[in-house]
Image 1 (cartoon, helix red, strand yellow):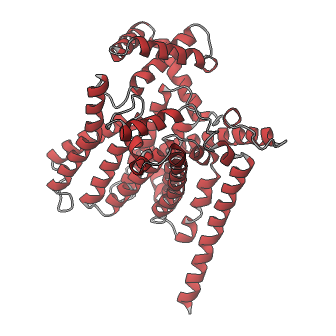
Image 2 (cartoon, rainbow, N blue to C red):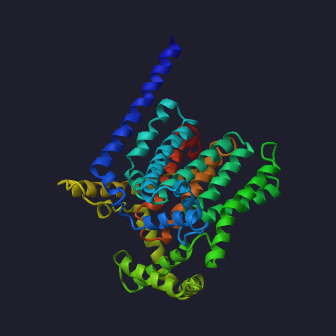
Amino acid sequence: MKAQESKTDFSYAQVIPIFISIAIYFSVVYFLQLYENASVENNPHPDSSTYLNGARLLFQVGFTPEKHRPIGISLILGLPYLFNCSEVVIKFYILFLQFLCWVGMHLLIYQMVKKWIRKEIAIWVIPVYTIFISPLFYTFFILSDTVFSFFILLAVFYLQKYFINPHGKYFTIFCTIIFYSALIKPVIYYFAIFVFIAVIILYITKILKSPEFRFIHTVLIIFAFIFTIGLQLGLMYNHFGVMSPTLQNERAKYYMIFMAESIEKDENPALTRDNFDKIIDYTMKNNQNTWEKVVNQKFDSMLKFKKYYLMRGYFSSLKSNLTESSNIESTLKNYRESSNFTTYTRLADFVTGWENKLQTFLFILNGIIICVIIIKRKVIETSIWFPTVIVSFILCTYLYFLSGVVFWGEGRYSLPQFPINIFILVVLLSKFRSTVKALS
């Protein structure tokens, strides 16, 4: 009888927060007209065409990479091409896939936090994550951010499994996901390189050697690196003559150059994006074979003679990506001609701006607590939760600081950190007693 009551109570605990999440989802979608804006004819985001082109090139033009989009995201988004589907079907497939990734992140974060708190409480992280409008908003545009965020959270999920049950297969999966994530969004490229080098060093120094982590796992990680990042670099060198995951690396440097020059001229980079697009398109068109060399030479010159303006541009971009809204009002159109649509979009912009600031605050708060715990050294040696928290925090730090190289991030460069910040905070709060003991 008691078992039956416990089962009933648990089912109710699941239904209520899930119902709240569903209500939030349909409310946001309805009032912001996201279905209308995401329709095949109307999808307005300017970057969408390059992702569709990357998928088409990969499947229809002999495994050819798109210069700005790595093959990992093209492979995922272009799968319907295997069945000769039309572009209309492919667009609907991409939007549905992104919806599944968004739902998947809710399930992943629930699975992660329930290791540290009761299931009845853990289930409430689902509506907490749904409240953040930005992750939901970007599922309706053909971009890589939602898929990338899902893969990053999936990597952290397997990292936690490894530290709880240190079997080599979990760490191998974690590394493979990180490597493949660099083929979805190159922002993680340098972190993936660091993980690969760290694995080799740790194995050589016998730190990773154990009955659970064998030689075969190291071999599998090496092969995973070769067939993901190695393959991408080889394709880029073969087609474009550059050893980088995409030409976005050079484009990012040009962002920095452009922002530094704009600041030097007392111009607002945010108001001169059209000029940037014209300049970079002209530069790429007239220097196709020497694009990397031209950008690197100019960037090196800026580092030598105009470092101050480069740093100002970087921190201006970083502040923008950590605090500003998702530009919902300027992105969406009022297809239903609703009289209150402008009010809804402005409210959504206000909310996304503050939720971006909130999660930045959570990141800083998590960092302060972690740093004090490390200094006190009272809960580290005996805690299986701390390694997952510290690696997750390092990953968030890397993603935040690398976002400074792009000015027009529109909040997209903070999307993977949303669920990770929630996860870290929940773990720290769940270990409140040991954390307070470390802080005292």
